[in-house]
Length: 398
Image (cartoon, rainbow, N blue to C red; front, side, top):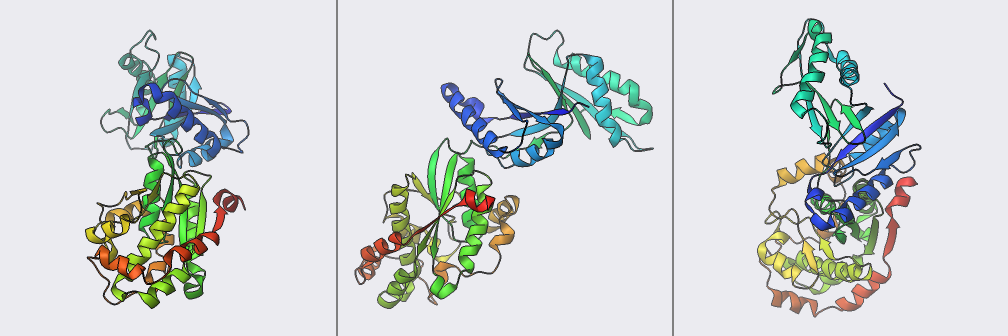
């Protein structure tokens, strides 16, 4: 075994981008470099269709751990550079297989080859045979058998023009597009299960996501903010350079409580959140708002109420979860590691002064009549003027 490992990174969707492909490749490479920042001795290369990383052997596992958080990667493998020599390839394959052999039990294996260098003098099936037969000759008596369809261990070879790599497993990536290639968006992060998942889905589509949290500490304490900061730090692992904007919302909620119809409160809260979100998005050059709304999940998420909220802003509103049920959303939350924090008990801003019977089919004319009863424009400007900005990279490192 060598003192260096080669990490072979594959992407899929980026490879379909035609003339813009180089832009997406460079964006992915920059994100990978940022994810591996601080690891000494790591070198990067970009052969066509792949990203190659040479890492000192002791750092290979840490590299793999960090790559699992980088959108745009379809899969990656930690392998070894080898000469295009069948004896050398087989010898390395034997070293990788032997620790998996169990006394008295069969171990199913196969060899799979991909040639990026089509001028190599053997075809992929021929290479499979040449390497596989040598491995079998050495390990058949120890229980190794060939089984292409049900292989428990696969020795994979990539034969390139400049180098060849051998590895024994693939690690699935997040897939999608590299963060930053699609622009910036602003996510309304509540601390519940849904909005973190919606934010993650936008990262997978190449967006850098910043977060806005509507805070009401006088009535709810600091628990909601602390929870949102935990969630946003987890989400920022998938992108870096995210920020959280904390907007004091208590004065707006008190005004709505004191002057508006109780059944309209939640929708009126949401209309004000959208308005503030749009103004902030314009200020920080975000191209859309992101919410965790799922159709029909709660009273404020009926078609009528969603329309009553969306109509107050011209900016694009992205709802990645709109057609998902709760169990689907929970499954994604577990996968991205936000679920356990999302279910921690902490009050939500929209739950303040919650009416016993919230409107499910709000009428816009009635909402506008309620809004005419309090100075929402002035309150909005005051709240924006008191907004706190938190840099997530600083929080992570600190």
